[in-house]
Image (cartoon, rainbow, N blue to C red):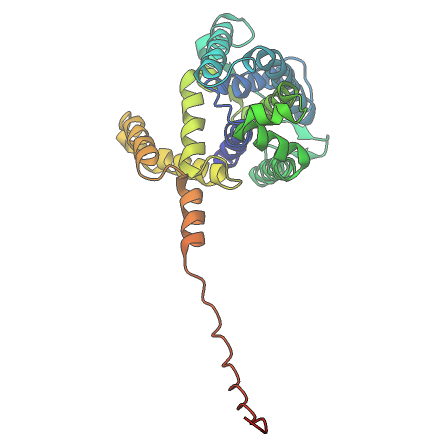
Length: 300
């Protein structure tokens, strides 16, 4: 369940980083904000899990629209720094606010009954619910990427001045993509709070933004399945290398450096390029029929 939720988070990040060429250093603020809002709505307001998740997703979308409205006015490293600044502000708000629990986090988030019928305290029901959330979010991203909106977003990422010369309002498209990405990241964060029954400062820390960056680039930025593969690989390393303690972070860093230096297209990108470079077997050309003998013309 953790791998699927982080895969959805990485896919949401890839929507702007891979197709819109907007690399955010503060995407964790949407994951963490949605988790806190969802946990508070379920624990304090007594909302059902689906309504609490919608509340968290909506809060992340509003935060994405507000921060994106300022961030998209810059590009490159300046865009990344603006998003990082917003993320740090959200981190300190989460640290000082009462309803977040500070360093202790928001604990005891109830799972409740989905639609008043499905008991999410049953592991099988919870797993099925997370699977539906992941597949639904991934399907939405897949449709967006293949739609005219996705092609326009890719065109803006490839050459924004040319897109502007065609009469496209590039800022409007970038803001829409940023808001959608924030909402999907919020969906992952809200569901994560229900699954883990806790929302902590870890989800809004800048290290979480670096982690989703690693997942996306390791799997293959700009590919549809790359973030999913990267998320599962990183989560698997965290689980199976947990005995190494803090050395897991060092290993993550080394893998990221290796990814950037050796195979910049990521796992899925390199496999796709390798498949395209393989020579295709061609069927032998049919033997040509012998040319007809020249006929003698009388008088020659």
